[in-house]
Length: 158
Image (cartoon, rainbow, N blue to C red):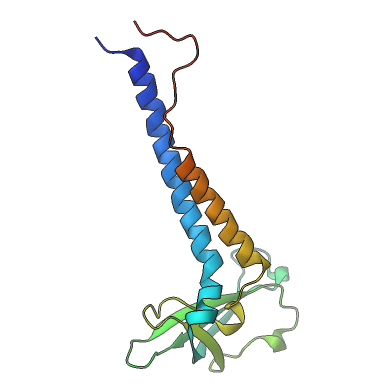
């Protein structure tokens, strides 16, 4: 005979495990996004990158929002060509956009050149701090909520 309280506990535990894993992965992603800029500003190498494309983003909003996607490429010494991109939002003066073929400064990690960002995005600001702290909170919640779900009060196994 099966113990009903064990089945309830197992079912709750499975849902909790999936939730904890999702929270943990989400927390790691937010922590990475929050710390990417500061890590690049401290440990990154600065290099000139060529702007390969400047296009208005019409898929993720209205054309009136004037959002642009800037793509660039660079080749680190002794490495292969790397690419990256930057979103510029609410650009109301197109003359401020970089031109295709022009250069922008980017920072990258020598060990991971695919981890790169424009130099002006490689800093610690309020947004990166909030992302990193939110990531830490989610990771903490995922690690702290490892208790199994108990059967409802008054539930008796038969």
